[in-house]
Image: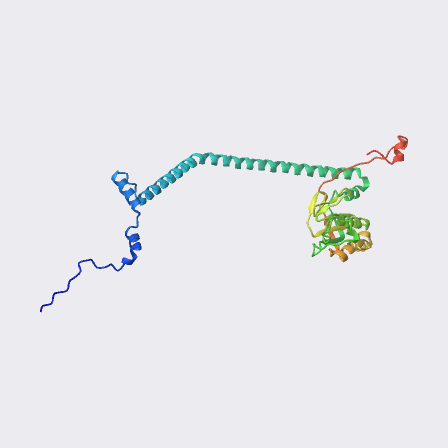
Length: 306
């Protein structure tokens, strides 16, 4: 008895990924159907947009073109204005040089006139001083002098930030008591005068009877000229006697207190020869005695004529 062949199924075989139909659909149709339909409609109507790469290239070309136009316009403008700017700059330089030369010329005239005035003042002192003309010129600081004397070098304390109260500086407005002040210098100079000094100079500036020692901030001024520490005080006189007399004077004792209490540094030495320049500027004043028979009321007040 013959056997019939097996019957084969005509249905397609089952796909291995049949159970993942959702993922398969997403992969096969990555573009939404609505977007695909809109794109197709635009292409059919002849309104298909440019590709993204073409738009980027056109934008880059436009930017480069705009930059080139800006650079070209700027270069052209700079080329046009360059001669004008150079001319104005040269004119300004010429004006500065001209004014500087003019100021130098005027300064030379001022220096020359100052020297002439000083020379005339010295001659006036010598003329009206009579037999004591040299002494008058010396006391007025009108002439440079040299001879034996003393050298006093004063400097601030090493630690200038220290502060304290009491002593000779209890009324000082400065919190830093380790610095030499104008009133300190006044004490030293007055002590030297009282000790017999014939002439005094501080850092090369000659003192006269009308010299002023003042302060501007932390700086000491002598006749409105600033001094820089250390302060070198040269005094003309008998060196041995002058040094000993200063140590015993009020100025010497004041200096010793500053050294002991505030660390002010100071040294004094005898000098066989010191050289003091003439005063930078002189003021000549004369006085005449008042007649005894006129204006007796003024005599009682102690006022006279000058």
